[in-house]
Image (cartoon, rainbow, N blue to C red; front, side, top):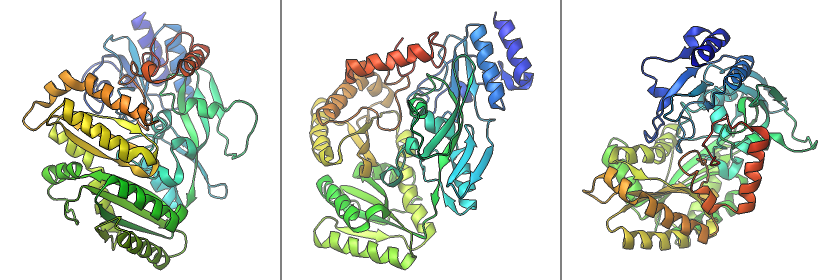
Length: 470
């Protein structure tokens, strides 16, 4: 059976695109190095028709499929299990930009297009695709949509879901749904697009998408501001929203220890402000002019100083300086990795509740796990924090993770739900949070999710064991 399946796959995509030997760690190990599997084969189709044929072949031979884009996910949702029976279907060769419709402000791209390449293609037409995240140089559009990725500009433009108008999907039985519509209004029944976005490859394989574009801003202003407390950070957000309106495109918060780790592991990155309990990175995009943007921004910062919301601030004077400020924020996950394994949390809480959540949860962590270090940063503008727990100084990171991860997770997730939040804001469920979901989601919601899975994938061949427990 295995030999027959491999022969069928080679006939579909060509023998060089069916990988079974050698080092397959690029496909079998997740980005965080927490999940290591063994694939029957890594198959690399180059078209939607080939994807559909691969799915039909796997269905005929009873093999399950793990769809994979750039393999940059953080919840173990895109690597095979250890059985050696699953087929990893890599979409990286589906990398064509099929069309840019400037008048309709849309572009049609294949799932394997790298996010940065999509951004650059839009910019070449004088347009903006605003999805932006740290992995944009290697993550792919299919993965962004399968996980409903967030990033740094959700405050203004929304998650990946809000940036997609239509999809092309290969179903679990190998049929192709062509939903590549560029319509902003199409009220003809159930919205299948929204069903597949965020489903993490468990319902079908996204092969192409129609994405929303926006006009390029005429100017951008970026700044760092030192903030004494999270309450004042929330106050600064309210002020910025009132003064800048829809022009406020970024509002990131970084705790002191997060930036300490950046300074420790990347000393070449200049930090232009003295240490502060909290530092906020703000960005404004303006449709008029650089002078207009800077005038609004300076007035907002002056008002913030007068109200005691900030103690200091620095405004980027060039594109290079703006990039260096963003580089500080984007280097926090890398600095954490250099420091050692840590317990990650991608949580969301209503913005108004974030100060109370952090204060109470910090206190509980300190009491139950003395010396644990908190790496707290994230997208304050949309209520999404990466509330991560690092082992105490001098304690082995792996041992701390092994002994305390379950208890730390329970504490943090209990606090998140007590404050009306969610245990996954933008990373998804994958394998990491699959067993946590039944404890944190309503029985009715889980029943509906399982019903959808059974209806669309009754044989449980699409990324089994992810999101919904078997």
